[in-house]
Amino acid sequence: MEHDAFPAWPDVAARLIAVAAGRAPADLVLRQGIWVNVHSRECLPDHDIAIAEGRIAYVGPDASHCTGPETQVIEVQGRYMIPGLCDGHMHIESGMLTPAEFARAVIPHGTTTMFTDPHEIANVLGLTGVRLMHDEALLQPINIYTQMPSCAPSAPGLETTGYEITPGDVAEAMQWPGIIGLGEMMNFPGVANADAKMLAEIAATQRAGKTVGGHYAAPDLGPAFAAYVAGGPADDHEGTCEADAIARVRQGMRAMLRLGSAWYDVERQITAVTEKGLDPRSFVLCTDDSHSGTLVHDGHMNRVVRHAIACGCDPLVALQMATLNTATHFGLERELGSLTPGRRADIVLTSDLETLPIEQVFARGVLVAENGSCLVDCPHLDWPDSARNTVHLGHALSAQDFEIAAPPGANSVRANVIGVVENQAPTKALKADLPVRDGLVEGDGAVCQIALVERHRATGGVVNAFVSGFDYTGRMAMASTVAHDSHHMIVVGTDRDQMALAANRLAEVGGGITLFRDGGELALVELPIAGLMSDDLASNVAAKTQKMVEAMIDCGCKLNNAYMQHSLLALVVIPELRISDLGLVDVRTFEHIPLLEPQT
Image (cartoon, rainbow, N blue to C red):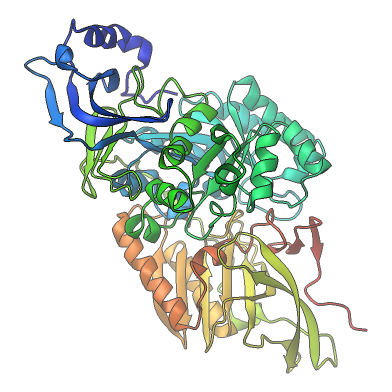
């Protein structure tokens, strides 16, 4: 699991020992700071850290015995020295950036380690896409570990993906140097029912001695949950309330509390620690999904830690949840997660533990960021053409592709409607009485149309349905090829002509996000790599996404982070109602249901 250019501990142990003992000089000494020890949960003033070979050799009140004429000495001047922050569960593709550009964006925020699940690209490009993500991750100056995606499709029989991940793929990936475990096991009914394929993937991971990621998105904490835990998943980030967090840690899982661009699940769960007094060692902070605008303007793991503190968590406990707890969970406690001898010298200097300004960031003993600026190169892969040409519609779409025929003679119909819930991943399964005009079912203002356009195999397939919560007005449509997890194309709009324009535009540019109103394009974010990512700078992508957000608002949408809600409308493993290329899916029962209710 070592970076190709970064020495493993056994290879440099003799040098570290010599430096700690004073027999050899350190490469770098951070002098006279406050040592934040996440093992003992202490702040120890007037300490030095001596670094050699990118690792910590010595921490103590005086490192002068480690200091030689060539040693670089940085005066910390009483600031806090904290471990580099770790994101325990996240998807790089949600930032709409490649691993290199995602790293460049988060390094100034103090993130030095990420545990990433590239199941987005797995749905589009299969094992080849995972390997591309893995290989670019290993090039970076920070630690990016890859979890092999487990579920593509996430719900077999309910959706169709570009590629399918098999147990053989999982077994192969477990031999790659940067693979840390199995990505979130989203097919929780499959695990609970002992599905042979899911258990084979888990077994291949466990035989490799690696961690199985969890995803249990159901409120049932009875036998079905116990069966899921018994199947092997070791963590879960889908909890939304205190009871969820408590249930997970009581059953031996790590409760991963997420604060992403649209998921605000920390506040309702962290009371398990702050009020109920549960042992914080079983809690991990993560982001799950952060778009580029959040990364550029608000932060990354520093944002999550600040939020946990604002929710009443002790700053040292919050830091444990974003450093040591995460490293321990993945079996890397001796490698990272604390400022102690032998560990990678991933260090953040900050003048305040509560507001957490990220003033200087060191990764593997190198100053990589200072006062918000990334100071190092983040190398790119040469992404092949096969990864850049992935939007295949079969034919140019027209308004007729988005028509929903009403039963003969009907003046109105009752429809099943996807109800968006602000700041949460789950949706509501709603019903609405909708008007019929010229034999076609129409939205009614509060309810607009949604379509899923097949884009992997050029079938020309379009599934139409209805969604509420966006409150769009006028003649508009928004389309995106980011459509978790199968990543077909989602189009939401109030006008079928605009929906066709938006869909065809994304086919033209190779994927991304666009918004049309009255025949004109108000905003466009090009995502040419797998229709999911751009290799442009995060700041440029963020500027385009901000223009997209402004266009959505201009069209009447008031939801917080509405784009994230848009991108999850096809996520058929999170209740209650979703859309797939095979129809509407009731995730409470994992069954397809009709769009229109039978007439009585």
